Length: 259
Image (cartoon, rainbow, N blue to C red):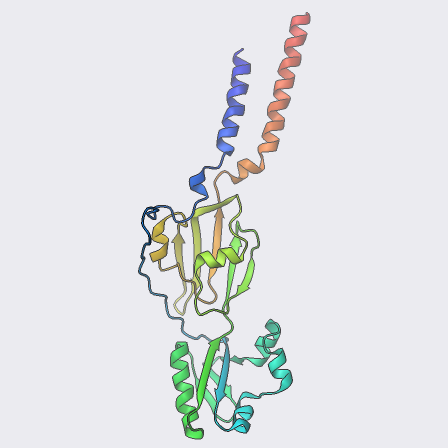
């Protein structure tokens, strides 16, 4: 009887441990559901252009021929510019190791450690020497980030918006799996001084004011597994062992009774 009771308790314990609570799956807990709206103040960090970044640069003037010369405009160029990542790399303006971009007619212009707006002003000043009333457009097209760990589609992704949040990044990777720990998200951010790390808890509303909420180019998002993942993966083995023990006990009891 004690043996059977132990087996029943063990099986019940396995079920309890394997269960996932609702709190483990809900994002941004603690936001007042009764309120019509909530406000969380957080400024997006400014990204400063780094070496090997790829920029989309367009300079428009009243003189179409000059614009075409500077922008290297052609039918094939316009058609293939955003076709794939290789086209972006070939047709975009790469920041060299000295921190410059090379633009036809205008020459080498420093953009290293400048924001996008600051780089626009640098190009505008250089263009004013040769052109009148030029319109400058600069966009970062090498905004890539990595999502790894317990997500459905881990990998390297590209973002073509001006901003990106960690929630958007995880959504692009297919959301967190059943084995992912929403309370333990690690963001790795390369910088000139080294690598900055942020620990995020997606179940808390404080996430919205965290320094790691908005992602920057080259950030890495790692979703850690829950502590019971190994147990859940081995649950069939445990069940098989317990079933074997139960069967063995029943056989032994049957033999004992028969004797």
